[in-house]
Length: 225
Image (cartoon, rainbow, N blue to C red):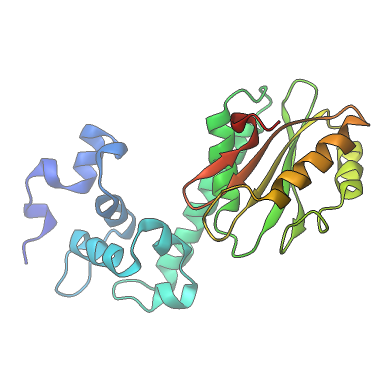
């Protein structure tokens, strides 16, 4: 087995990242930098490629349970802990980017944050970004858990939180664990009910995102809000 140190410099993941930027690396090369070392009979890049084949994707590897993750060749509890810390830092970075005090102007940034926050839940979660009068984020709050339908989403609970935080606008979001973000009639009914309720306290719903697996639906983009 040829050591990575003997590879051409432009093919080594770390050197390639420095010279060409992180976006130039493949999934296996990025994973190799995270893992740092291979295992007996396999260099770190080969190990990374095999892990991606075994799990199917980076996301599946990142979402694996501790038991499943640690049972794979070349992995263990120390790397599982390290990975969870990296993922949480990424989520907090996205949250801090939204909550730094500037008005919320980027739909892409909002969707990125909400996707990172919501897409890996194994059950449905109904949440919202609460905004002030200048559309700066006050708080992200999760309201309801489980099967989300018009009967399980209680407008009075949403109103109570809005009044408590003195919010002037809101962005609704919920996830579809199936991965398909297509809006159901129940999703549309929930949104309509909340729009009508919040109009009574002069709070505007700017959007309702449905988060799927790498995809999303925006009610604002569809012209439904």
